Length: 616
Image (cartoon, rainbow, N blue to C red; front, side, top):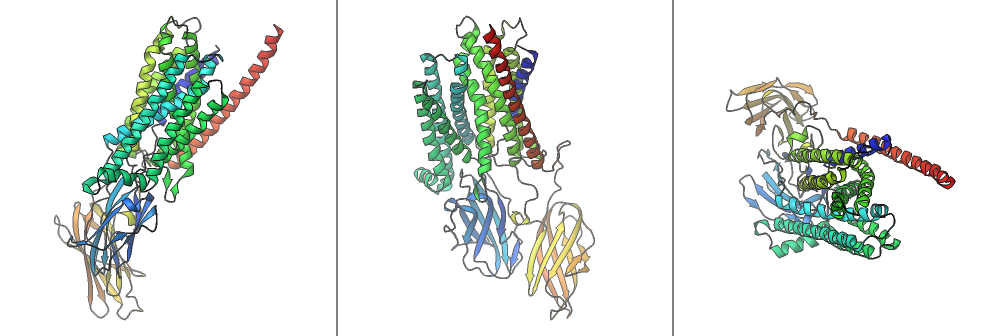
């Protein structure tokens, strides 16, 4: 073997383990996030609205969503209803009863239509009154160990089925040099296929029960009713049933191919069955945007899962088939070495696909490097990368054992047989991390739209007679702040124009401060800098003087929030999506160029070898 071949195989093994870490960039399963609402949170309306519209980033299921309305005295108001006529979309429309003047809080619990994860939150609005009722932030339940376990089983089963198909079609024909596969090997392959199918079915059944338990929380539904609702209410049920059917079809296709190993039709049937299973499995995860299923995202995830399955599933199958043959004295030893070396070549392809697809997916879970250490999703991803580092060491070791120096490496196969199971174990740990990411909501998107903010902080809009008064303070943290007031109405054309604006702010920890506005034109007033001592509630009174001497006042309570923590040194908070996409494009072009070059050189080598063989 040439030195170039040694280097190529070393890089393949190194890249394979590195790709494992990139494979950690699996986007979370669907978790709906509120991005806007009408009326907006904290809005003050001149007339009572007939409906409230909640805009999410992915489609939600109105049949499985709940809304509740209460007034400022926390008295529940009946008569509201979620509009089912709009169908499944990213807009949740809540029909409201006739509302008198007052302040109202609309609580909601919306379920994503893809995997029924729940998102809870609230908005407040006022009808001719200041909406000064603080509400808790949007709540997305944390990952469940039970759900993580069920997702791990589904991932492991899928990867095992992928590995069986890859080994059957791409490795065994080369390792056996065209000879029929023994009945014992075919039996082991069928047993692994059944094991993968059972793991998939148990994982999917567990996810159904987890979803049903969520629907039945608080006695809303019985277990049977929760299961029925989960299966019939929307997209989750269709994908669940489709996944179960396609897994069974894949098992049947594997059984048929093993029984008819020389049939090209049987072998070809494996590919579409497995491809359909991958499409349904990835569509169950975060493969949607506001309009519904995202075809490009699903395609990228299919490639990602297929490449991961080729590696972990293919290696697992090879361990069960050939690990014993490497320990010495077995007639299958040479075929085992050929199989593992052939797998290294397929793994090089897998790592390229993993790298490109992982770069395209990672920013959908963490928008910046800083979120790796400041969010639950990011910390889970980091833990997964640590497990990937262990696989990196094993991948390098096994590549070296497969390419011993010329004239040496007598104990290499035995060492490989002892060490390869640890690489499989490391990858199973990484699959657990992938399952945890699937059960964890993505990191929040920075700079969310103000209308989607679910806490009344330092921004209020109020209506006073013919005036609409918008007052706000930036940044709303302890220290120096900028105070602004915008008055609409009451201009020179009004019967009683506005002549002056005064703002009084009071916190329990410091003296009351009074500020007089400077008119900047078009109803805008600026004030001197506001120095705040601490975070917490702050009473704000805006007094508007009119030309006839009358005073209009609005009172509200703002919440001064603590100064946000700076990201750890060395981890920038700037969005890295564009950079990752550019890196993926460059990597894709480089890998395609390398593959084309390799094919051309291989054909040239074979062309030179044929005349040499004929001359003998």
